[in-house]
Length: 254
Image 1 (tube, rainbow, N blue to C red):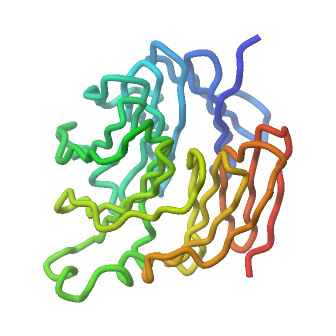
Image 2 (cartoon, rainbow, N blue to C red; image 1 turned 180 degrees about the vertical axis):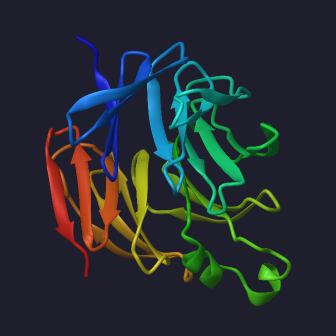
């Protein structure tokens, strides 16, 4: 039996990662409408573009692929990482993407040309996840001077097994600041609807709330799970966490 590694839901399409393929399911008819084949090892994560036209997939085969949903064709393959690609995500304007890997590197890519714009280094262990800060939150972090001549603000958050969270300016390729506080691997982050508050989860079993504008921790929930906390997601004012303790918890955001 193959392990299902990741699930994602977009309107009436359900995506399952299993074996080496990506399967798209029509929820209404409970049928598999497409199978995307091309990766040569386990698929780590997928992300839909905003309009659902494209999918980004990251894989243990060290590559990232851009798929066209309507045809199921692979439009581009991005290959620069030296190890397992843990995550790949579209930028806010979807002209670029970011990826992170077991090789401790973060790459910022130009999607049209499939070229690397920046190589971001600074983490001292595996980078588990990258995620773009919502633009309305990013505008509160940068000064007015820093925002000049920028059409879309793409600030990136990365989390790592080195226990740190880093915020990057992907235009200049520089590290703006680093958030420290977790006592073990940081596995995931998610953003409050206000765009400026961010929640993080870790192997230290805590959930932490950060104010990105103030660059500091605002709250810590101890022993949120009995074991390592793996992932977190926010949907409006509900915050979900999943853990090695085999439970999923729902939290109400204040």
